Length: 350
Image 1: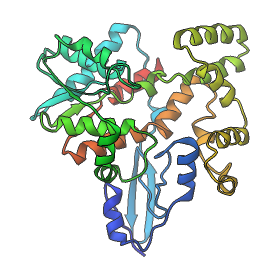
Image 2 (image 1 turned 90 degrees about the horizontal axis):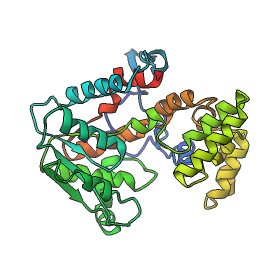
Image 3 (image 1 turned 45 degrees about the horizontal axis):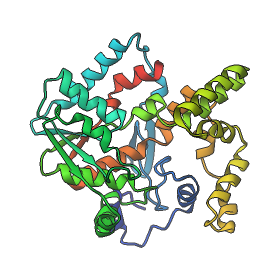
Image 4 (image 1 turned 45 degrees about the vertical axis):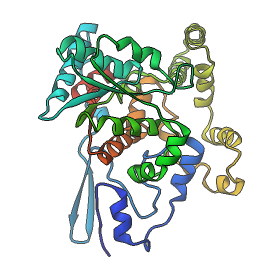
């Protein structure tokens, strides 16, 4: 009998006053079994949905019309012809996102994505006094990339660091959950939250490296989709050569094991994950097994290129939501040079 909209979930909960929403068990299943959120229009609240990316909504009386006005797959453009061509397009994206009437800084995680942004700012845009913001945990600690971040000392004048711990997470939990409004799959989002909190005292806009892994196959398990593509093309000797190099480079069997997993039928994929996540009640699993959309879209891609597109469509969005929500909680604006539409269109074609 009514339509309520907002840019985030909490205002809707206030408007509904607890009387018209309940837990969405399908999304809970996807979250517990696959560690995935924001992959469909559904939210953790049964009667609250989100307008999908590239979509618009039209209300006319009691009629609601949804229309998809942009689809990435239909806009993939000309591939890059050289590394200089790639660098030129990337620098154009950075230059556009450096434009601001307020101070601009950059996240610096130590990874290739954020490091590429900071390097280009320093070398090609003449900004020597850029402020960078990093989360570190101590030398030798899991997830700490301070050895790579420290390479910028002497090149970047204003480097700032924050040290998230279990104690600070416990202390910040209420505010952190308020900022994000829905469950999250891990603690890396908390590191981003702390980086935004650190940055708010120095800049108003922060450049972020999100998007590079999804565009260019930055996760090891993307190898599984490549092997699947080669297998269907009967290039079995090539698969063995690629697997050997994969294991040698990364020191893990994740790539080959991903190939095996991605080649299984959906019911077996569910079964293996349920064995791994044995804390989930069996009757709950049996009620939702096979009903999710993740297997059909995200983990069932036939080739590497299609998997990259499907990751943009069904996995990547939560990274942007978390960055935006954490940033806005501290009145910060996050910008993403890797997500310039012209750059994305060409990367996906390369």
